[in-house]
Amino acid sequence: MSAPPPFVLPPDGVRARLAALLAGADRQRVAVAVLALAAVLGAGAVWVRAAPRPSGSVDGPGAAAAAQTLPRAVQGATAAGRVAVHVAGRVRRPGLVRLAAGSRVVDAIRAAGGATPGADLDAVNLARRLVDGEQVRVPARGQAAAAPPAGAPGAPPAGPVDLNTATAEQLDALPGVGEVTAGHIVAYRTAHPFTSVDELLEVPGIGQRRFEQLKDLVTVG
Image (cartoon, rainbow, N blue to C red; front, side, top):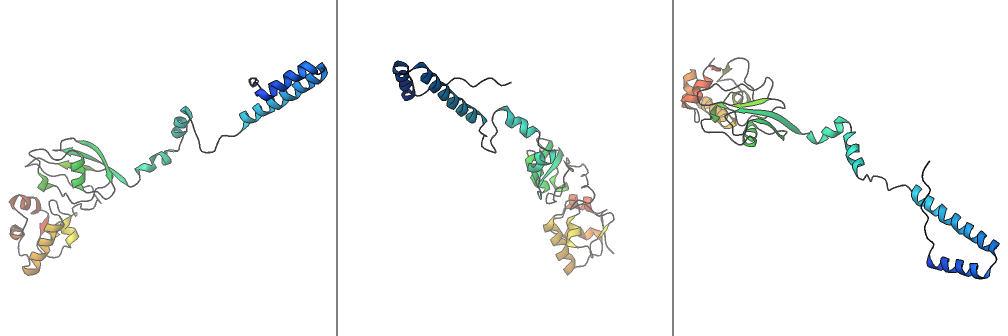
């Protein structure tokens, strides 16, 4: 059972009128007037307490509780359009980073504080698009680079790539070969079809170290 509403003093004008009634009228009329006034004031208090709050407003601890009861799908809506990747190896702050969908390996390395001295960035395809849940490992010089996850954009093909017939996209997927170097390979073979894998050393942007990464992944048909 709820507590009765608190007694509210009537306005000054009403109190003056009551005083006049008490002074000059008979007690029966005064009692009726007091009872009528009390009924009016009580009905007003009940109406104020029962009036609905504006819709959509939540105060105090109830707001936090309401947020906690939202479905997980709603709570995770802000994560839509983002990818989470684990950056490891020669970076300043290895760990989990979250980036906008469509970000590239170079963005993940920057989010991890950048590469540390001794990192071999030439062994990593910095232009490759990230896949949610993958690991990006930056190797030290002399270490083998980790292959991108299977099915990821830029993942190397299962078998050797023919330098004379591969598409620019297939060449771009090779480790250490980005869009620019792939274009150089296509331009070179257009003028001088490859007769041996060693001719990769004549392509601009491919030095001895990158050649060592590629020689077992390419072939000449």
